[in-house]
Image 1: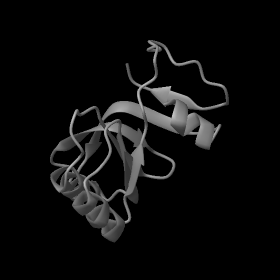
Image 2: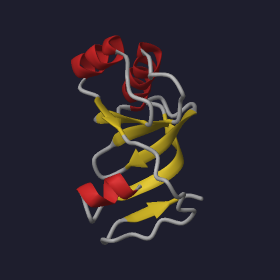
Image 3: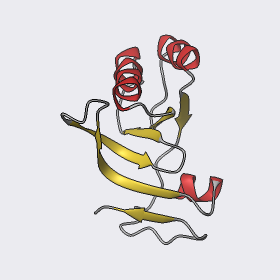
Image 4: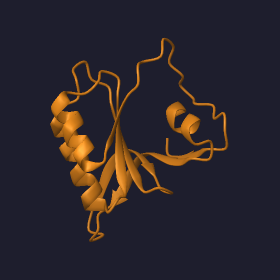
Length: 117
């Protein structure tokens, strides 16, 4: 959340969002939904590098929900194949290291808002 608000102080995001598919028959769960830009953000806290399967799953979610793009945040990095697949699909792979101290409640430094728990 800190990364998103530092990038755009007026960002609006929804945590643990449920987004309807194109047919409106079911909803897909995503970690973060950016409704203004219609982007899906997936957050991966893995001990290993994020693989191509995570990227492929996001490509499917983007297509299924008619989103305009996506990003994957990872604390451990990405395999070269995952990065190549993401680049081909226009998905950003962003490596964010863990903070030494966990913030349980994010204090926005800008005008960003969020919905969810």
